[in-house]
Image (cartoon, rainbow, N blue to C red; front, side, top):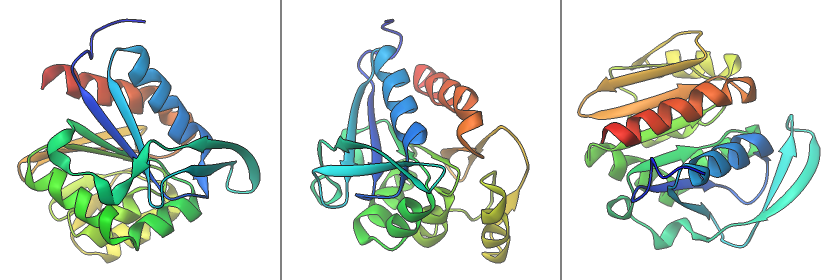
Length: 187
């Protein structure tokens, strides 16, 4: 364990089911191991069911709190894991949308992986951004007519006063976690 992120506060948000296990647990574990304080908030609070590859039910994780109880002022970075059901549920949740907008308006970092960028579309924050995602989300981002899409392991896009970090899938997690860590250390 290092202390390179000591004093940094990370918020990871999810629905209560359909979360891609590694996209929740690997950033949570990596950032904690670097000394960050990490809060996992879910829509309803309590149990959050993870899956492997969207189809295989895996472990249940207890979230720390509910989205409705939080604001961006408490945190340095927002992390949005994927999982098709997770991302589709989050994109429809008013508190998830509110939190993304708060982070962007406060000039803070938002990091989304896999299907997580769906929430960014519905929160209305992708204008002028270049990002990556799971390939099937590409067309949704382009149809929003506000963003550019690239096929890259990780894409860091500092524009419009805040930083956006995106990645494609669980294979990109090392680069995704490193980009989040680097941004937190610089901030």
